[in-house]
Amino acid sequence: MKKLLPAVVIACLLLSGCGGTPRMSVGESCTFLNSDTFKPTGNQQQQAEQIAKHYEDVADKVAEEVADPIQKMADIMKQVAGTSLGNKSEEQVAELTRQNNRIGDVCK
Image (tube, rainbow, N blue to C red; front, side, top):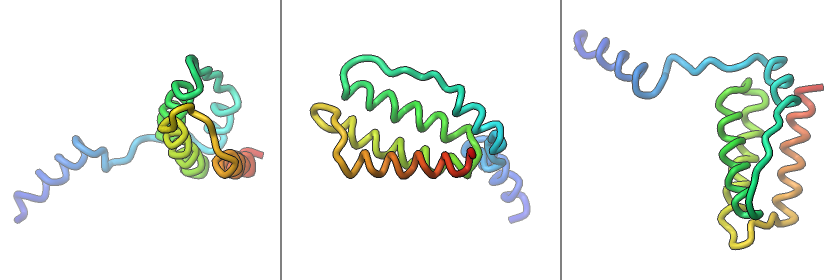
């Protein structure tokens, strides 16, 4: 069993990054978010798809305090992209606003 442990640890580090992906600090994250100039293109459905992908990419980089609401926003935008017209429901708009406000609370 002792010989297996190092191999498992190495595999974990190589395959899943269990060493942890370096993330920005909260301050760096807020600065990054305030300067983000991403602009989606195409129709509403394509834009929703692009926004979801962008949010996921950002959530992987920023501090955990803002990553969670950004990932939730990405999940909502995936749902929006899955609709025929790419329109947000009132509930989705409200949830996006709530998550955005959570980010604002962290980045005061």
